[in-house]
Image: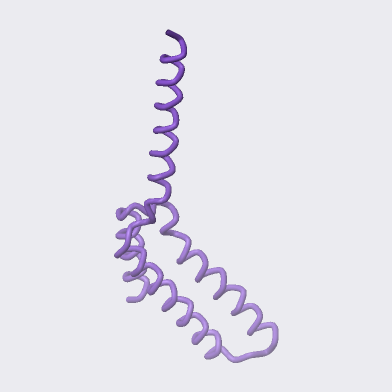
Length: 100
């Protein structure tokens, strides 16, 4: 059930403008759970400790994906591209003025 929620939130975040960055929470949760489970197993820990770690990783991924699906990425990239295009227009205008 939690996997279905993660996949749904990832699709929503992807469509909300996050693109491939929407896959990072699931990948990070998987990596932490895998390494943590390996460490628990290597130290002789119990399986239930691994389940708790896996649940916490999934829960954190769901929370992050929920936030990502509700909010679009910052418009910093858009403003930077607008600034660059504005500078290009200013440079083009300056060159045409100085060329006269």
